[in-house]
Image (cartoon, rainbow, N blue to C red):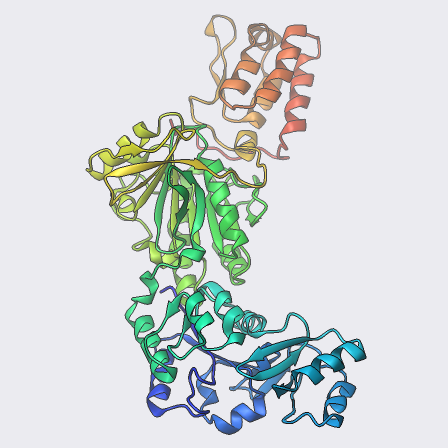
Length: 573
């Protein structure tokens, strides 16, 4: 379910000539029985609204005074959301014969042509106030107070997100309100500018239009409607900007090790978080521990717990990286299988998270597993799976995929591997060469070459994994010494320093003279800067070479105080 909230304007939207028809009331009852929340967002003063509308208790919350007052019908309590203008402002308007003149908890309201007196009073009294016009009404409020700010306050009270709201209105003061919702609809009698700019112009007027919207909501048709203003930019293709739908998308980011999967994923995550979508990154190897847009749960010496994750995600504005680097490899699939259904349940209750990213997806949902803990990507909003080996994913995980981003120097090979896993023909590539990225929407026979838009924040790739994670056999360093007398595998930099301190001087010097340390760091870890520094130590061969190499590693990579637990039988080659 995409939309958990229906937010309605009152006058000329729900109501016609100030009254709400009985069939409109029944429509609201149907929406409420579906488990969705109802919000009433109106420019009216609260007492006036309650006088003309005896069914306010149908709504979970009421935002009155054009965003300045939050009212709870169940508690019959109101909360001003801003400070009112000073009393002398209304007194001056009364003295000038301004009528009608409404003074609410915060709002001061009249009608045209008294907007001239209102503006003069604001200027001459030196007040910081805004004037909002609405079909001849003139509303005076503190700066920044409007229906959108009131909606935000109501959602904050409920622990919900604007990305789970469909809002409907009719007038000038509804522009910001509709824009703040994931989907903004306008009844057919709305002002022309609102009908042009909204996401969904309805075919019927007033309460009939609201009933039309409710039918789309309850049938699920509204969930599938495209809202292009929310689509997330991936990069530039031959035909211009390429964008991805933020809801109902099952996406794989695939490519060989070191090809840029994490870079592309981080850039997409940045844009989602900036747009206030709640994202959860399932991070087995600490690749996203430095992502600044989310709270990181879990350390090399302390794995996260499901309850810790769920508590954090109660707030829709808080995204999370679930860092599993401190968890034994054999325990990670079971933790993942426990956490995912609980994320689905959280979304069913609150409408978020909006996107879940699963790194190293071929380890957490391997090909030999027949069932995965996600049945429909919409149960999580959207799902991104990151993998080196798309053919190694569970068939049940492959069934969730409708798009592939292939990265690296040969994206066609990656798409071919994925197409083979799906039992489809390899798509042809269209467009100019674009630094090795291609987007394939699997329902299409072709894939589009794309130049990905880079992440705004620099992130040191794989820093935590190289420091304390478990690297594959192919990336690990092996202390063998002369004549291959040893076979000690260093699974990460922390382990490398520990083993180096324990091997004999002859073994250490053997690899030092051959340049093995800098070669490993440069070729396998992809850290050219550190490789250059270590290479200088190798060439100089000082007596304290081990200490100097260890210090270079520690300065660049923060090492944990205690070693990480490992599964010696694990091999992720």
